[in-house]
Length: 69
Image: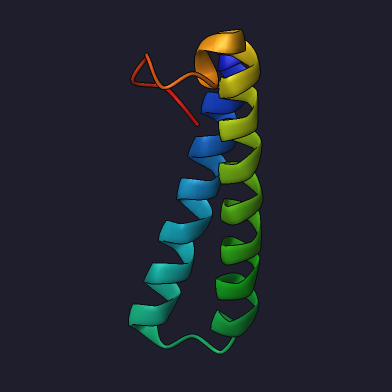
């Protein structure tokens, strides 16, 4: 599960970097890559946080620990 979370994070980071590079070059396909990076990164962020709470069990819900949701 942790490896999947790390792979998804790196993939979304790469997509954001590609979109940023296209923005600096003012490429014609920036709209697609920007929208795709935004959509994918936000979906991955939600999935990773949900998986982290599942991984930590009840500790992810209580405010007694620094990983509370």
